[in-house]
Amino acid sequence: MLDLRQLETFRVVAVANNFSRAASQLGYHQSTVTFHIKSLERELGVKLFERERFSKSIAMTEVGRRIFEYAERLLALAAEAKAKAASFSRIRSRES
Image (cartoon, rainbow, N blue to C red; front, side):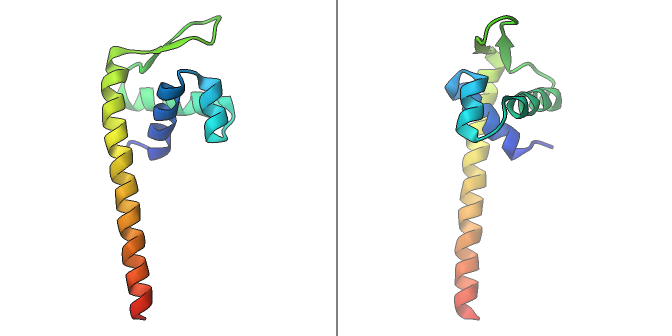
C-alpha cells in the first residue's frame, strides 16, 4: 500500500534534488528520508533515484520522473479529500 508520507518525501527529494535539503525542509533526519525512499522503491519495485556513492549527487531515474507525476496527483487528491472532510466536519458541528 502506498504511504502518503513516503510520496511526500519523494516529492520533496525530487524537487530539492538532495536528501539532506529534503530532510531539512521536512523536519526529518536524513536517515528517515532515506528509509522513506528505500521503502517506496521496494513497494514499487523500481529505483527512483540514481545515487553517487561518494557524493551527495542524485538524479531521478526515468521511471522516477514518471512516478513523480503520479505522486503529485495522489498528494493533491489527498489534500483535496482532507479539505472536503474538514468542510463536512464544520457543517456537521454547526448543525449540532
